[in-house]
Length: 196
Image (tube, rainbow, N blue to C red):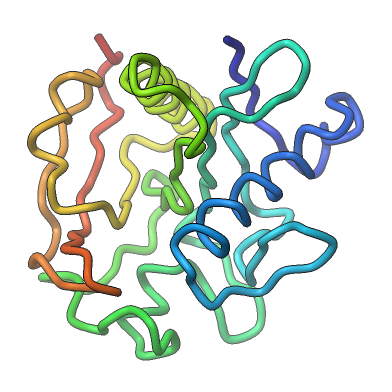
């Protein structure tokens, strides 16, 4: 199992890995979850997949994607968009309630957003915890390298059950909300300390 953090400046060094990650996102979010998201050439994407973002990918040596995540700076803008959680709060995203945060969404060099976090559906149950922990560890490593001390993310509200197992300190930043029949909550992942 390997981890790679992709950016527009290093895609060319990793063959099909970026495309494979977008294909894995499509398989989970569009095919399995039946979310209404943009897709092209068998890949899922949205307005936040820009040169400002980074993509953390857990994969095997052949490039098969096991898990992935997108990191986006909270300081970025692209047209009317900034980052998903803030744009939802601003009422720009019809699929996510605007009351997802207790306070105003941060805009800070030291806070990034973690979005599109997934573990591929075909990862065996016996491996899922290890793959998920590896993904979160690499998210923390990449976030710190990018100058972030924390990352906001919209997660399944069951996060308190597994946060300790992946070795990251998490704090609720908003209420539990039902989105597409699933209880979700915005949390802050604190990366100011090394992960355990």
